[in-house]
Image 1 (cartoon, rainbow, N blue to C red):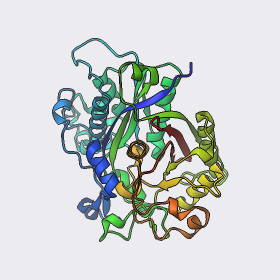
Image 2 (image 1 turned 90 degrees about the vertical axis):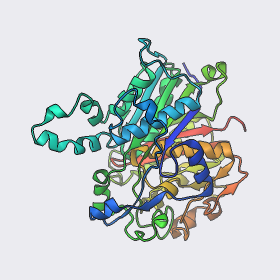
Image 3 (image 1 turned 60 degrees about the vertical axis):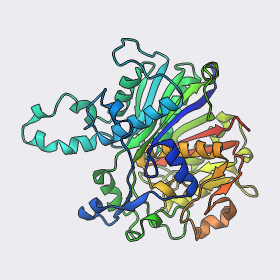
Image 4 (image 1 turned 180 degrees about the vertical axis):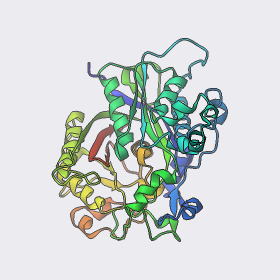
Length: 424
């Protein structure tokens, strides 16, 4: 079986908006969501700026029917984004008290550290021998897989429920895996995405490794400098992005709106060999991942109009751009390239999903959002990539027929997929 797969719903919780309308507005305006963090200062971080989600509580009343609102923060972000995506797809949320399960619906959701905040907040109870006070909700909140479990519960999903944790590639990998479930006939609808909480306990390691921005504490909006010669690390961030993927015929039959079609994708790893390590990519395997994703999608490199890069405002940006150029044999004609992280920071496990949503909104809105603070471009990037195709300011009236989204994570893991605008 070889089904077509489309995106029919999107939902987001991010530093620039906790709903799609707000997120889109700030995406278009190129507004940074990075602010000063007193908590990071109090914990003596060198980096004291972060992208904190602006969740407005609009789904709290609904979520309280299913679990106490004092749940793990990452799970709360993911559930809110999923509810919005489900409603955006104009799908009916199942009756909580019905025994009916949706055998055609599945979930692939993930994070890097969902559940650990819930655990840390209750560690003293365990150490103090007060485990009876933990409550029956403790296990599912403290487990990373709790994200997928909660989503299965709310949406009665019983095709398959999978949890993914592949570092910064998590969100994109979840989308590729969900796409494959529908493509091969194992489901008709899939919820896919990623999340992570704003947490100094997650971010501390990045600060120690000097991967976080250390020179913009007085100017938070300038912390993220993807592609720039002035890049000094990223601002940590948090949030969630969830997408409803659907079999094309099923979506058409019920009159669903279609944001984009996923043509194909690929997941691989570098084995931490050939220049790859725990923190750096094996460039040959990155190139393979991109090329195979295009092959599975049935398109040629020259057809790509836009790339939403991983781009972390570190030394890896130069490596990544070189890999894109090699994978796509870029010389004379270059697709637009930008970084959503330049606006929101690095949302870790949520990155791929939030950035995929940003990609889809640009495709539908016919614009390329600004890559903030990208000037001056890194000289090695400027030497191999057309600077005019890396926008410092928003570009309007752009037809994006084919877009590519990819993320590359710690552990030398890669995920890439291709989106098509069906209106072009």
